Length: 116
Image (tube, rainbow, N blue to C red; front, side, top):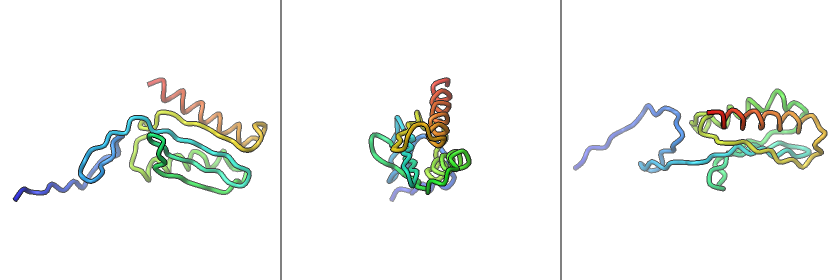
């Protein structure tokens, strides 16, 4: 019988280990949906939702957004480099500060991702 190799210390990488096979994820996207009563942050790969975080809209986007991005990246054991772009979709008026903050974070994220 063959020996089974047990891997215990995997570092966060852009690849996912699924059922002993290495599946390479090419383009992961962070998508933020801004709604009147809640905000939703999705981690999407190949048009498939990998994970999502939802939190109540409390006019504290400047405090919550970066923390939520960090949480979703860490929970899925990825590096920030694995996410190729960030999108913002809003159901609230663009004049709201929440939307402005989210779009500024997304533009900065996309600029940094393309600068590499």
